[in-house]
Amino acid sequence: MEKIKISLLVLLACVLPLSAQRVEKLPFGDFEHWTVRHIKESAILGGEVKTLYLPGPDEVIEGNKVYDYTKTPWASSNAYAKVSGVTKTSLSVEPDNGPDGRCAKLSTVFASCRVAGLVEIEVLATGSLYWGKMFEPITGVKNPYGNMDWGLPYTGHPTALLVDYKAFLPATGKLVKGTTFRKTEFPGEDPCQVMLLLQRRWEDNDGNIHAERVGTAVLRLSRSTSGWIKNHRIPVIYGDASKQPGYRSYMGLILGEKTLYAVNSRGKRVPIREEGWASPDTPGTHAVLQISSGSRGGFTGAPGNTLWVDNLRMEYER
Image (cartoon, rainbow, N blue to C red):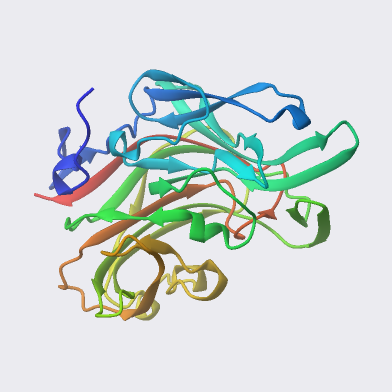
């Protein structure tokens, strides 16, 4: 399959009528097509061949190979890790049957293994799909967002993100933080999340990446649904979302431990310094799209949370 050029043109796959708007499908956003990867774990973990999935061209990749992310705009939380010479995988995103064919299933799960049949290791993984790429193999659990290149070049001005979804949340009132040998529980909730952020980015002379927030669209799900919700519309708020009706704190600028990373012009991974709100008419340069079975950050969440998504589309004014 011809490689996809990641740009505004990648969104021009299909145009459908919707009142005074037009709707464009996102590439591989109907989740009918998946790349299958077979990764062999280290002998000390049992040496099994595990299967990882990614929305993308229909192909099967054999062997412990770094994935070519020019084939799809999507990356996921499905991990191919090699820590201290030990190869391990975790699966938290996979295809499933939906009402219109296949869909994506994202789950918050423990990636567990027993080393040499003796020592049990558990890492909590929140199922996530996002635009960008994962730097493989992962070499540790520190700074998980630093293992990802977040966002794609994008200059569109959508009015909304459209999605079909179904959610199951156990709602136990308990959260778990699990990193290798440590697992702690504490009270709290972990809503599922669909998030689209439009940014204007630029790079300074020292290679630092700065950004202003141009547009914000966030859906949080705090309870299970009774079935599929079709054609749900998440409106994009332009300009300073904090001054708009319906603003919630989770729509704010991304700072602190949840800071996202990108690769600068020198090939170095650096934080995206989201420094303020752009005016509503500011042209954007990048889009961050993330879908996740939780919203608490790296290695923290509610085990059992499950989010199914399908038919991702952008809505534009004609």
